[in-house]
Image (cartoon, rainbow, N blue to C red; front, side, top):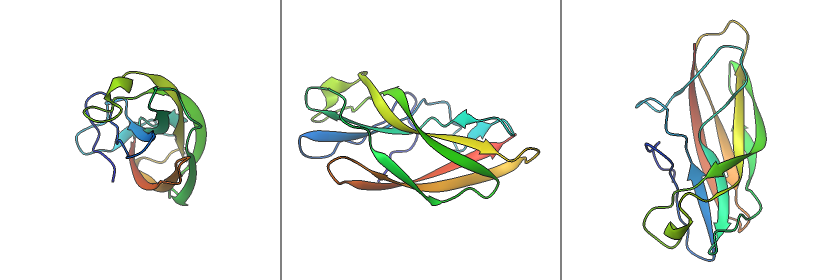
Length: 138
């Protein structure tokens, strides 16, 4: 289960010693689609990371593209991100930064309109999450 895009950063705590985190830069429109310029490589806001109970970054999750975009391409990379867990086991880690799994989307030159893709994210502890990214190319 993924959180909707919050205003600042979002996270999903999991039970156990580690906490998987979903972060977001918070500038996506209410519909959830991120706006990207045609043909321009753009890192999307939502990223995935893990911290231990002492807020130390743990090896970043890995990802697999499960549903490729129809009008562009996606590259996975490591980027630094901050987490906000909110109430729960890892609330004390709010604002801490660490390596996260990020997705860079590039549309075909000249394409304008909606696009999207699906991914499967695997955390170090074996947890698997599925995510769907939606973009609006302008």
